[in-house]
Amino acid sequence: MTIKYHRTMTYKIAVPTFALLLAACSSSQSGSATGAAGTPGSISISGSTALLPLVKQAAVDYQNAHANVKISVAGGGSRVGITQVAQRAVDVGDSDIPARGEPSLVDHQVAVVTFGIVVNPQTGVKNLSIAQIRDIFGGKITNWSQAGGRSAPVTVINRPRSSGTRAVLVQNILGGHEPSEGGLTQDSSGTVAAMVAQTPGAISYVGMAYVKPGSQTAISIDGVAPADANVLNGRYKYWSYEHMFTNGQPSAQVAGFIQYVTNDTALLRRLKFIPAAQIKPI
Image 1 (tube, one colour):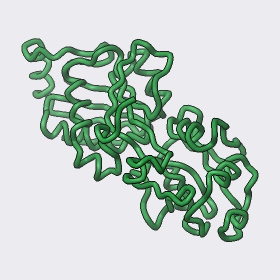
Image 2 (cartoon, one colour):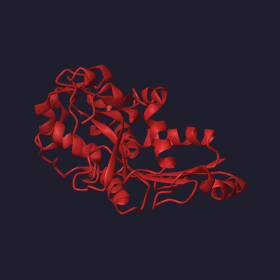
Image 3 (cartoon, rainbow, N blue to C red):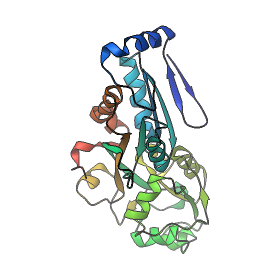
Image 4 (cartoon, one colour):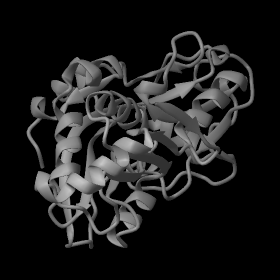
């Protein structure tokens, strides 16, 4: 089995040709349906980069146990995932946000993601109030000394409007107001995390799976840290359900993988996700 990574953040796991031929010949006997976007033995997925670390690793693990399945996973953002699965371009659309206005899509809530407001450690900031966060992303606070940090310019790194991480920030933290577009914009959680680590004065927002202590500081909001316990007790507000959408009911093959992602609680916790069953679905 080989794994190939591409610049589009898509990876494919190839299996031996014989296994693929065997899967194609036996698919009618197995009773597994094939989604309109896929082919026998394949699952295509795109969307949320916040969910990407979980889906990528789950795909590797799943194929170690199912050698006749090939899974392709790409990022692009939550709205991209919703759009592509609605158009049947992929089998599964990953998203941090609900798919409003898409009645054909079936919602599979697989996990809860905790998001963090992250800053470069050199800012000297470990806690911000909601008001300060709104002023930073609104362009009113331009130096960290205005927020209790060191005297250094604030560099805001935003996400594009296709980002579910941004949509949840706007809804849960910014009071429905879009952030100022005067800063930088990056469309990948991994790129954002790297830029925050490398840029003195940087601030952005990512899923906690991307936060590495010492490289970025995930600040407390009004004194409440981005910890699982604080999400579960309702004190920390910057989180969302992670959705894997299918266009109609999924094939047995796709449903099996979604169930695998949902049930692997050890992997969920290792990658800083919360099992969906711990919070009542909406």
